[in-house]
Amino acid sequence: MIEAELFRSAQRWCPGATGVTGAAKLSGGASQETWRFDITHPDGPIGAILRRSPKGYGAAPTRAAGLAAEAQLMQLAYEAGVPSPRVMHVLTPDEDLGTGFIMQRVEGETIARKILRNDEFAGARPLLARQIGGVLAGLHKLPQDKLPELRSRGATQEISEFDRDYRSLNWPKPVFELALRWLRDHDPGPSVETTLVHGDFRNGNLIIGADGVRAVLDWELAHLGDPMEDLGWVCVNSWRFGEIDKPVGGFGSREELFAGYEAAGRKVDPARVKFWEVMGTLRWGIMCGGMMQRFREGPDHSMERAMIGRRASETEIDLLRLLAPRGG
Amino acid sequence: MQDEPTPIELTKAVADFLRNDITPLISGHQAFKLRVAINILDLVTRQLTQEEGSDAKEVERLRALLGVDGSVMELNRALAERIAKGEVDLATPGLTEHLWATTMDKLAVDQPNYASYKRELGR
Image 1 (tube, rainbow over the protein chains, first blue to last red):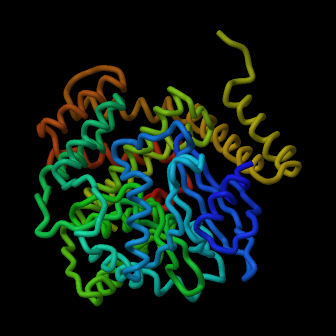
Image 2: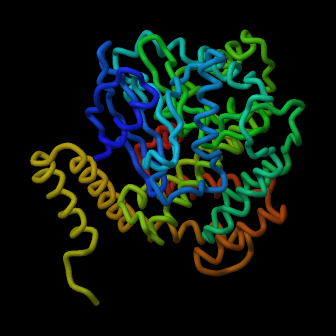
């Protein structure tokens, strides 16, 4: 059924399209879905991805930039040479597909554990930390006058927000309290420069091929803020998937990341990066607690959600490793 | 008093049945869900086995650290509050050791295969 609607849409913006096949839902929460499909065309099939909120789910959660902004950011990134899928079409209300957009499908792998372990990525892995530095520099250089409207968020506001989120869980976690204290004591204040921040740039949200980074995905948490936030988040231990001695996504060192960033003409502030790594570790821990709440209150009463609640302790040990490391 | 077998023995029997007899029969997304289910039962078994002992030690440390008495939940709330107020910090004798011991006990139940935990276990 969705194939008929997609074909009707494709006829408008893909001249020569003769059909749509292979539509399959890749992921779907209550408010947002991702579908893959192929457009049949005399020049050969065109691989595409639909990202949408189904009808009736217009409002985005407060932190999310919204699908329209996401489409605009991905297109802007694509035009600036930051690895990103080309946006082919932004949905209009009369198409009956909900709100969202259709983009070119980039082939490659997003599953972090496969990227870190499979042989086909063995050549790419040693290059990725530095390459990611370059990609982040390109992203932070996107022209601000062309950006969609985004929320603006600095360190001080983030600390208060996480403090509130943690307290709403109503479950005492002395290690989280310690982290919140540390963050307040080390709050670097407003950054010298405010740029676009991707907000969820990490191993798992990148399409990787044998040649390296092919696309940056999931722009829904994009905002304006301290560019060092993205460098800290990509180093959070939870995104190393077991390769704990390689801080940058399990691929390589901070030095390589920083070198790639600076080679692209931008400056790194390592103290701020460390601050955002601590913040990011706490952020993921609190998110795990939030998943547990959603499990308990429904509608997603799944075992997977329940078990994510039990992963908060992973961030507690990582916070201790950052803030109170043991010798030896 | 309830009869035997104990909850630990019962959960372990179910987990072993799913792992050994059902896993070979299932594939795809259901196999993934089955793995999650087995992981949950293993976690529950670990908690039933370890919680009593680790909670007792945790309470003992907290009483020494805070100089008050209470349940493990009450004492954790009290510690959380004191850290938030800045009355207790990493310079407080015993705090670092307490947080490490407590966190290691949590990981031993939640995620004993987590790489950071395995590294710290070797220290």
